[in-house]
Structures are given as C-alpha cells and as structure tokens.
Image 1 (tube, one colour):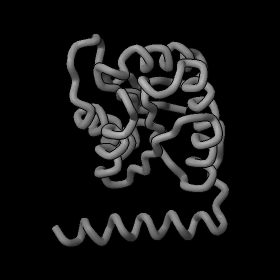
Image 2: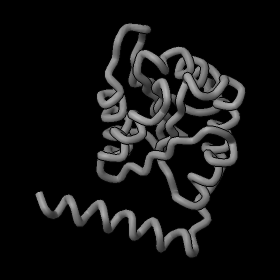
Image 3: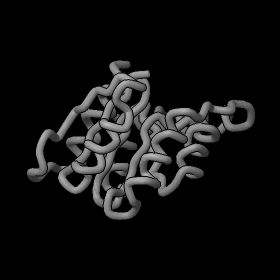
Image 4: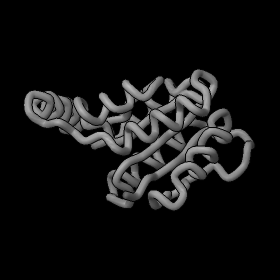
Length: 150
C-alpha cells in the first residue's frame, strides 16, 4: 500500500516517527516538510489530497498541532474523506464506516504510542460497505453538488 504523508511544523516530529514506523511495511510518499521550519497546514493538506486524487497514493496521513486545521483543509479537496482521529477506535471506525482515505492526527493532542496504534488501525481496517456505503454515496453527492455550482 502506498501512503502519502505530510504535516505542518507542529506535526513534523510525529510525521517522522510515523514514517519510520511504516518503513518496510508500506511504501511511503513523504510530501514534507523535511525540516522543522514553519509550514502552513493547508499547503500540506493540499499535497496529500492531490496525491490521493491523482492516485499516487492509496491513503494519506496528515499531522498538525491539533489535527483540526489540517483536517478542515484536506476535506476541501475533491474525493478526500479526511478523519480527525484521537485513538485506535476512531481511526478504525473512520475506515470501516466512513471509508476515510486520509487520517489526520494532532501531535499536541495524542502521544506517539496512541498515534502509531491509530495509524495501524487506520491502515488495516477495511470499509464495511452495506448501509455505510449509502452514506458515503450521500457524502459524494454533497461534494459534487457544490462542485457543479462553480
């Protein structure tokens, strides 16, 4: 599986730890940053969202300080279903029930161990379909309806 990773400056260290955790298990597309200097989270969210849209990555992981800003920004991109998760359960459910394709984490909110467990849960969970598929279709319709207004 190919995973696109990015963060802002607040999430840089956790992004690096996630990349190391995934090394050898998944192909990681690190989209930056590559140092701890200031980075705006919308720019990082756009990089991962576009990688998902171009099918350069199967799933994405984004990290900022709280996870909030980067998840809001990511969800503005067509086809992205970004989920801000705080633990293993919410990460698993985001895939199983919502078919999320981008995991968002807050580096200042959760510890490294919880974050890595959430990453593993996100990457191993599968979409359950069924009644959940109908809801994901409705999300797609909402997204499409606003794109058609442009």
